[in-house]
Amino acid sequence: MNKPDKIRQRLNSFQIIVLGFACVILVGALLLMLPISSVSGQVTPFLDSLFTSTTSVCVTGLVVQDTGTYWSLFGQIIILILVQIGGLGVVTVVTCLAILGGRKIGLFQRSIMQEAVAAPHVGGIVELTGFILKTTFLIELLGAVALAPVFCKDFGIAKGIWMAVFHSISAFCNAGLDLMGSTEKYSSLTSYIQNPVINIVIMSLIIVGGIGFITWNDVRTHKFRLKNYRMQSKVILAVTAALVLVPAIAFFFMEFQDMPMKQRVFSSLFQAITPRTAGFNTADLTQMSEAGQLSIIGLMMIGGSPGSTAGGMKTTTFAVIIGCGIAVFRRRDSVHFFGRRVPDDTISIALTLFFMYISLPVVSAIIMSRIEALPIMTCLFETVSAMATVGLTLGITPGLTIMSRIILILLMFLGRVGGLTLVYAAVSSTKVQMGRFPQDKMTVG
Image (cartoon, rainbow, N blue to C red; front, side, top):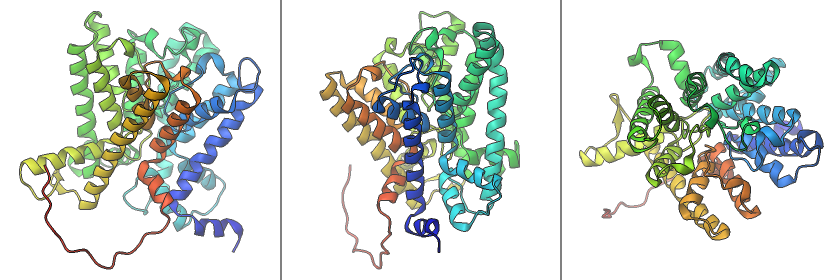
């Protein structure tokens, strides 16, 4: 038995996923430290490079250096490669390279791929991976083609094409990194608040990238025959539609009331879509009311869907939590959607994820608030954005101290690999429960 096989036997699939992301982040940080990666030609401090590499691989979008003005073309290419790897998933990219190299994909590798893309079963996983890669590159190409005329008009042909490619991939991968610093540092897409092409294309890329690879597969297989979709896909599409329309209507009446009608509509839609979990913004978030900012925090926590380029606790988790509440209020003994019952272990996992996505950002925000002497609401916005891999900010990230930056790095990494994946990686063995304790009653509520 050779050394790689022995290593694979000692590591479970969760540990390989975690180590894969960690290795890519470290390599990315070392590349970004090189003088050629910065416009100034100087070595970038390791913590700044590590933060940028983490936010790229974890498709978050929080930055300590403006992407468009600090990093050279070489640095921006490295960042875009890291975003693409992070969006697709390290395991998916490695599998693609193995297939192209003619290597046989064994059962162990297939099980890792299943975990990485949240597939329901191992069967057909290689074919699904091929479909994911082809569809991803096609959608990103179409997005770049649609964006190119606008950017070429504003920045010239060469730079315009690069801007179109960069923002198409960043939007589809729900990364939120942008190159708009040449207009104004850390401005995101605020200069295109009224541009219909930029708004519609970016919003479409965010939604398509965030609904998940398994939902794509259902759309490919069953087209418009929605009744034949998996329960998960139906839930994802229903929740996604609700989480776009309801917040957009709320923002339209609560915020942006001093804007012209066209700008107000685009702003309301964009700010409803981008928190899950893209990180672009067309409006100044610091000018929103606290109610609006709190609504965005809630949307960031929910995030996208399982097996997608998005983060957060996921739309399905949110649906199960709501379903639990409805089942209790109606005195039902189970949670069900579209005539299908949700397994009890899925409910337990959903409740655990909900607790993690509430507790960790809140505790981190309290610590950051004490360190930075900033309002707790501002710090909570930043920590939720990091944990949910969103990238929206109220503008405090570049000025944070070392300890706060480390906290955000850890939250971004945890949010991308998944809280339960990290726990399962740490607990390498599963104890078989031979019996169960006697049951007793406990009153709650």
